[in-house]
Length: 158
Length: 158
DNA sequence: ACACCTTCGTTCGAATTTGAACAACAGGAG
DNA sequence: CTCCTGTTGTTCAAATTCGAACGAAGGTGT
Image (cartoon, rainbow over all chains, first blue to last red; front, side):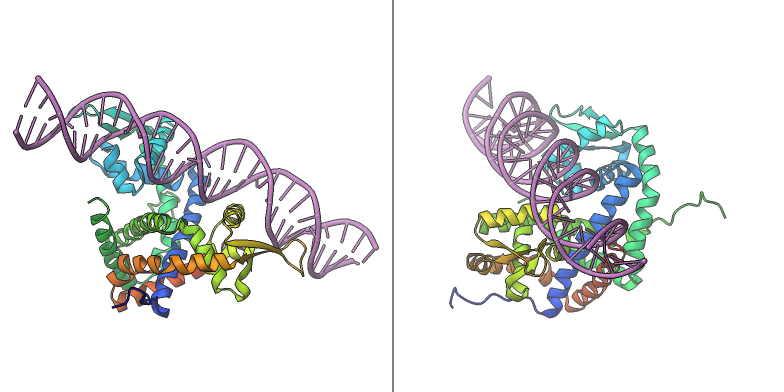
């Protein structure tokens, strides 16, 4: 067979799904970013760091583990944790079992900042995404994108 | 009623949809970025600029219109068009009917760069997203996220 | 104990992104 | 025509992001 085969382009429906995904993603991020910054002085990234720490046992996570959850680079996380540290919302604690290890840990002030920022953020996510979709659409989105994410997680590391 | 009402938090399904969306979006962007840069020396943003210009009549668009399609800031677009101009893939042309106006215009070299980059990019989008989902899931995604995007477009401008 | 390969988090420089400020112009009301 | 308001694209400084390189340490096999 020829190596000059035409690739399988996206048909109209596939293109609509892909464009919808990209555009919705960009528009949403843009809006959430604005709202969070105005309302709480936090970037979306910083907010997500607080959320993941808050959900973790003892409110602390190893840097690498946190970077994985956030889907960001390690150096990017180092930068943002430093910022949050300056704001007093997060602290660093060294790991007892591994000298190299560093725990990012939510401070009381960080917990309070999250408690204050969350309602507005969740309300906007609801208004812009969740409440726009039906229960069935949400289920399909969760299942489909969950599968997509799972596959992406797999051949990222190896 | 009290103004201290608990906000409507996301239930398990809603959270799954929201997390799936965010994570899939980040992972996808990361992968596409890497692939495009390695394969064609283009960033995802630059690739999208070429795509939109290519799809436009005469291969040219006003800066503002292009920024809207890309869902990016005007200053960000100015920067990227300048980069593409240095690479010889895009040119600037002033608008006849409006002295302030500037058209970004695809060059022959730009068309060629797109022709060369597109197959690999589309193949990856297929592998990571499109082909992972069923026809029904794609339809739901297109319709749902299309609606989400449409609503976001509305109260962004006014 | 030793060599070897991997992992951890940070640092560094370069690239990118953003919003605000800006100057120039367009378009309409009076 | 003239003022007024909104648009257009760029510039600017600041913030953020990334990947590569790094030093330090863990873990394994011999």
